[in-house]
Length: 351
Image 1 (cartoon, helix red, strand yellow):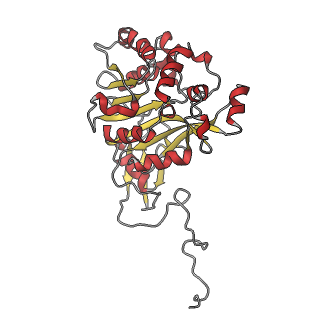
Image 2 (cartoon, rainbow, N blue to C red; image 1 turned 180 degrees about the horizontal axis):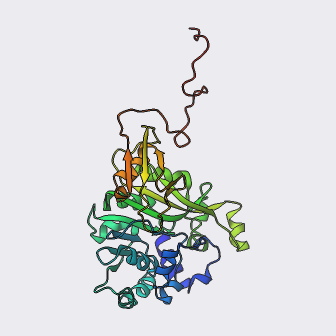
Image 3 (cartoon, helix red, strand yellow; image 1 turned 30 degrees about the horizontal axis):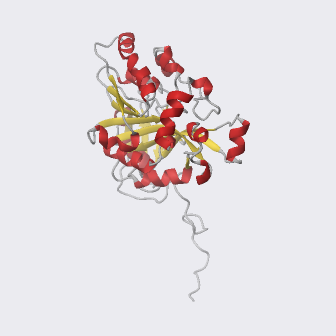
């Protein structure tokens, strides 16, 4: 049902973004100036059929090879094409013929608008649950993006497993989607409107974290989130009080990430060289790293900076030679009650 409903809802039911009944498939936050400028270079027909729920414009992607899962009419792909430049590429995959037709129709117009000698964007028709059918090379993509699409597919584990296979070591999946505060009842999952509005297929956030880790992304990092408004009374009544959030996550394909944040006494100093984030680099919702400042960091965050495309933008201090326990305010707290380093006044009695 999911595949057929997605094709029908986004290809036939919706004529444009204004036909949506909720704000689940809308981007609420104002784009940064660079993204806004790039958006103005995208054809108006492409922008009119945009159904994303977040901004999928990861930093420092010049020259990168990007895979866009569920590329729709192509807005995100054409925005990212400007950031990767002529030496990079963007491959969009979508299952809806009507959406793909819009994206492909304006390929030459976009190339001329960007001033490129040849197009750096291509669009493939395919199901993101079955990426193996598209003969995409493993370990080939620097970055993978997706915007409010994974909730629409039935086999979400297959998407994350394929993403891990297709990314290069040190590569990143940077994507926005809709998440539920609890598991959505099975009886709602076949509702065509709730599914098309990106609600009934939304993962419970705890299940998402488990799926990501099982696929090999051991430390999912949330970048942004916002609660969703359900403005349609009939839709709200069906959901019976379930709350939903739109969130952007980043998942790094890195060997050696630990299951929680561990402290090795490390620190980084940001050089201020990432375009658009010269003053503060935002790794995730909890790591806003000011330029020039010595910034203590856990072992996982260290690897996310030192073993990825971000390495050239940082100085690194320390190593993994000494372990100091869980990283303060980041990892899971020690469960034993007494604070770390506390010494009991008297020895414990033996039983």
